[in-house]
Image (tube, rainbow, N blue to C red; front, side, top):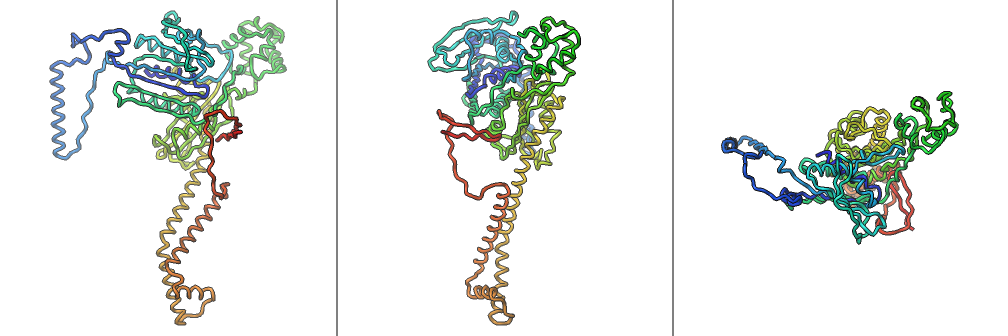
Length: 618
C-alpha cells in the first residue's frame, strides 16, 4: 500500500512545473458498489464456516463469558474507587472480502499531453536516456505505471486519462490498462471530446484497493509539505465517504506568483561519467572526431584542454581520429583519465532551487511560526554533480510538536519515509548544538526544513526515500545551512529576551511606585513641618520652594506618584529608542501600505531579494 501512495504522488507532483492549481479527490467505494461497477452480483453466504469471521457457538460462549468477567471486575473496582482500566478493543478479523476500495482522481491545469502519446505514456514501461543531464522532480519516472499496475492487481479496472494542451479545442480521453507480460497498452477507448471550458492540463482517475485509516496522516502530511515547498501553487484535497461525518476537504491556498526558474539541461561532467555512459554518448553523438567529441559532449573541456587530454591518452589517440572507431580498451583509457585528471567544477546555473523567498513564505503560510530564518548556500559539487542546499528553521507555530520536526525535500519533492538514516535527520539530531543558539531542543517547537536540489540526488535504498549520510560534501553543506539559520534566530531570540527583561524591569519598578511615593512624601512633609517651625537649618532656595509646595498641598502624594510613573515611562522609552537606533529602526511612525492582489493583468517590474520580492506596478 505504501508503494501505491508513493507512485500516485510521484504522478501528481511531476506536473506542478508552473503557476497553477492541483485537485486531489479520494472517494470511498463500498463493496456492493464496487461489485456493481465490475458487473458482479452480490451473493448471500451459504456456508458460514468457510469465512474468516465465522464464530462457532463455543467460541461465542467463551467470548461472552470473558466480557462478563471483565465487566464484573470493573464494577468491583468502581465500587472500591479504584482506577478502572479501559478494556482493550476486540481484535477484528478483516479478510480480503472486506477490503476498502477508492476512486482516486488527480487533476491539474498543467501543460497536458499530446493525444497520440497518451497510451504509451501510461501503458508502457519505457527506458530513459542519460544523454542530457537535468534536475528532475520525479524519482523513477514510473508513478503513473505503478498506479495503473496496482489498479490492475487489486481491482482489475482500467485507468482513465483526460488531457488537453493549451490552445486545443478538444480534450483527449483514454481508458486503458497494461499488458504486463508484453509491455504494451491495452486500449479500451481513445477518443477526442469537445473542450468547451478551454481547460488545459491532465486528469487521471484510478480505482484501487487501499487502507485510508493507516495512510491518512501520511497523505495529509505530504500535501502540507508540498504546500510549503510550492507556495505558488494551490492544492485542494477532498475525501468523500458514504458517511457524511467522515468527509474531509482541505485547501492549501496560493500565496505568491513568484516561481523558481525552469531547470536547464546540461552536459555531463567528465568526472561523473562511467564506462556505460561514455559508450552511449559515443554511439549517440553527431561529432566526427575525438577532439570535437570531448569539446561538445562534456562540460568544462575547452579545445586546448581537450588536446592536452588526448596527448596524455597515448600514441594510439589523435585529435582527428574518428570517435566511432574507438575500441573498448581505448574507451577504458578515456574513462581512467577522466577519473584521474583535474577539471573545473560544474556551474550551478542549471539548477532550480525553490528560493529563500518561496521557502520562507511556504513555512509562514502553513506553520504560522513565531520566528523563521532561511538560508541558501552557494552551488557546491559532489562527484561532478552540482547541488544547492536550502534550509529553514522555525520556532513555534500551528500543529507543531515539541522538539525537532524535520521536513526533507529532494529536488522539491517531500521525503516521508526512512527518515532515521537521512543526512538531514542525523545532522539536526547529532551535529547541531541547539543550546548554543538559545534553542531548547526538547521543549521548543522547532521546525527544520532542508531542500537539496541537484542533477543527481544520491538516494539510498530501493525506495529512494532518504539521502545517505556518507557524502561529506552534502553533509557539510546541510550542517552549515542549518547553522546559518540558527545564527539568524539567535539574534532574534536575544533581542526578544532583552525586550522581555526590559518589560520585567519596568513592571518591577512600577510595582514599587506606591510604597516609594508614600515614603518620600512622608519625609518631605515632616521636613516641611520642621522648616516651618524653624527647628532645622535653612535649605537652598530650590529645596525651600519644594517644601513650600508640600506645605501648601500644591505637591501631594498623588503628584509624586504621577511624576515617578512618568519618569519610569521616560527611562523605558529612552532605552527602547536606543535599542531601535542600534537595530537600524526609525523612530518615525509606520504607515500602512496596501498591495494589490496578484490576480489581474498589470504591467510590473520585480526587484528580488533573498527574503522578499518588491513589485513595482506601472
